[in-house]
Image 1 (cartoon, rainbow, N blue to C red):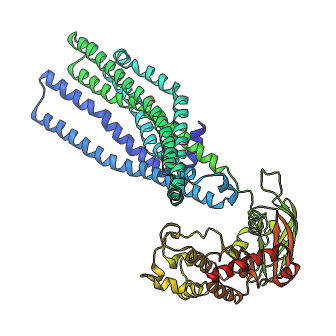
Image 2 (image 1 turned 90 degrees about the horizontal axis):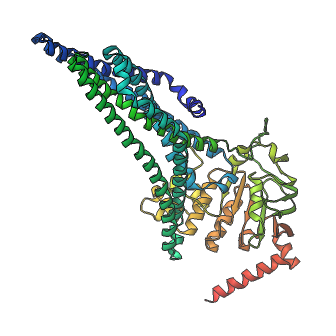
Image 3 (image 1 turned 180 degrees about the vertical axis):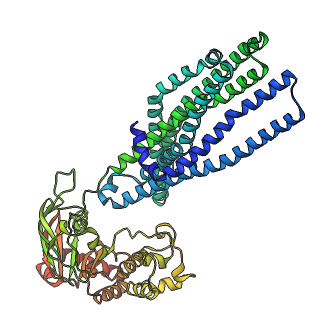
Length: 582
């Protein structure tokens, strides 16, 4: 009942289509039930010697007309019922995708892509099967079962009907009692499919790493384990189903045997006419369909229930970071950032990633974050982007507490170039203009490409800006990916520009030209870099160590301080000199 209540929410918008589909289905079922009466009358006329040419024509026309109407009706109920099921599938998949888009980054730390793909394919497909084929079979079987029994009673009486149909209640009891077993088996199969999907997606996403480390055998082993697990769970479903179908055939055979034995006996002693016997035999054939379909219906209900349960459990996930009731709107043309005594530790961790961090970045100024790997530079960016809230202290954007600000406002005014430089399998033009939904000025694309230093590289390609770059930009070099990502950020004309080690793969001359171009856009800048040349001109440089500020100041001030920053700087100068010698 809980499943039916849940699924009815998705079916409600299409109730008119379902009503029309059910009406057409009832029309067809009525005609199917009427056919044995045609055969009955024909057999009785033949037995009584009252068959005439006109009656033969009438019976033939009735049969042809019935078949024609049934063919038309089958087309319409399929359009209404199966069409509605496809719309529900579309609605749920859209709801799931929109829900995932609303989730914050922490959600994706705990949910793998392959598992999410299983929700969007296998689980939704099981729901669609119930809302289409399952609904059709439920209505069809119920109507056929009830009205066929009524027609049998009217034709041959209660006694003979009860004798021939006594196996059906036994079938119904066994199948309904097996519902929980079906549910558990289907749920385990869907979970195994999610695991298989996850292993497959992860393997292909990291195929270059697998090949580089010659780990093909290990990848194959992981896939085989997941594949074998799914195979075993799927086999359990097949075994369960294959038990019921032969069982149904056996019961159908028993019913036919009873019809032949008792029907022939009653025809011989004159209790039944030949026409009644023909009708009875035909009705038993008709009623076997709803009897056999009980197993399929129960299976589809349990499979759909398992799929919908997983989907609704997924939809219960809520973003940990969301807008307050009346969020503050930010101005588009300026951005200032301030950290006041901020301390932060990741959920589930005991140690603090950041300890008592304070700084103020005025509008139009630049701040660099440097330090050894693991010094929590990227953690500061996560707090600026409001992926997390601080445990202590506060983060202010334009002098407003970040938790009171509309989340999308900060995103819309920020140009972000991440470390991984994710690019889509589209043209270079579409990647650069990613922040525009449809209309954009092509000249702005060209200008952004020039500022990022990638314009000449793009023009060297055969299709220049229309070049499709493959999944994750696989056809581009590391430096080209970085510069395309920078162009994608610059075309937004951001008031806040965030570069997370985004110039590490470009040469020093290209780096200088990009930095000169960035200075001219007058945006507030936050830059993470390992190469000192990238950040020398920043208004303030913060050197982080183990989550706290070790040193801060301008480049010249930090060099004079002769601390950790200067040590890093001198090491890089030495490396550059050695490279120059070779």
